[in-house]
Length: 399
Image (cartoon, rainbow, N blue to C red):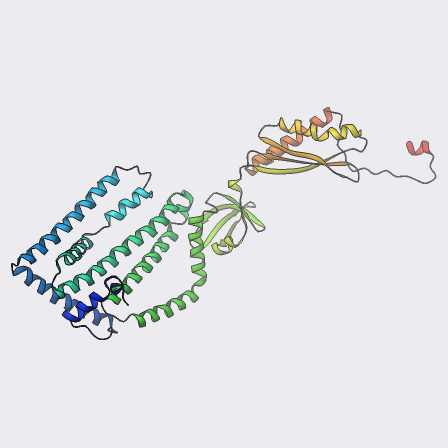
C-alpha cells in the first residue's frame, strides 16, 4: 500500500477506477509510470480547464475557493514570520531562528495543493480532477515534509558545531559531508515515496539500493566509522581544539579534529595522529575541564620524635598548608613505620588545575613544610643505618 493510499484509502482507488484507467499492476519502469501519471494529469487539467471555462456556478466557486484558501495561507505565513521576528533571538541556531526558517520554507506549491484538497472536500470536483488533486497533494506533501526534515536535521548538527568554536573550525569539512549524507538519505526516501505514488514498482529498486548500500558499507566501513565518530565528537563534545587530554599511555594537546583523524601535540613535542574511532575507544581524561588538581605527597620524620609531637604532626601540617595561597588542604595522617622514618601522607588540591601552576603550588607547599616543621622542632628523616658489632662495650656502641 502506497503512501497516498494510506492517507486517502479506498475512495482514491474507487475514484481512480471510476474515472481514469489504471494498470492492474505497478509499472516496473519508473519512467513509464511517471509518463502515465503525467498523461493523466494533463487529461485532468484539460477537463478542469474545460469545467472552469464552462461558466458553471460550481466551477467559479471552486476557482474562487482555491484562490481564497491560497491567499489566506500566504497571509498567515506572512503574519507568522512577522511575529517570529519580534521574538527574542539569541543567534542563528536558536529555536526561534529554526522556527523562522521552517515557516519560511512553507512553499506556495504546497499551499495551492492544500487549497485544492480543501475545495475538493467541500464541493467535490469532477472525478478525474479529484484523483489527480489527491495524488499531487500527496506528492507536494512528501516534498514539503522532506525539506522540513532536512532543515531540522541539518540545523541540529550545525547548532552543536557552531556553539563550540573549536569544533566549528576543525570539523567544517566533516559537517559538510554529514550534511550531504543527510540530504541524500532524506531525498532518497522522498523519491521512493514519489515513485510509489505514481504507480512505479519500487521493490526491485529497493533491493538494488540495499545490495549496493551493503557493498559500499563493507568496502568503506572504516571511513564511515571515523565519519560518525567525528559526528559524535561534534554532538557529545568530549574535547575541543586546545584541550589537554590523556588517553591510554599518551597525553597532549588537541591540535586538530579532522574527518578521519585527530592530531595531538605530545608533551615531548612530537605530533601524534590517531583515528577518531580508536581515540573514542579509550577512556579519555580531559585535563582542561578539571576544576582543581589533586596532589598527593609523602614525607617522614625521624624516629627520635616524641610521640606527643608525632601525634600533632597532621594538625601542624594542616595549619601550614592552609596558609599557602591557591591550595586547599584535604588530609594528612601517619601511614607507616618506615625503615628509617615515621611516614606521613599529605593530600591537598591545587585550585589552579593547569599543570604548570599545579606543580608550582606543590613546590610552595613543600617549601612551607620544610620551614614550618623545623620551626616546631621536627626533623625530616633520611636513610640511615645503625651497625652493631658483637663484643663492643655499651660505651663503644654509644660512641
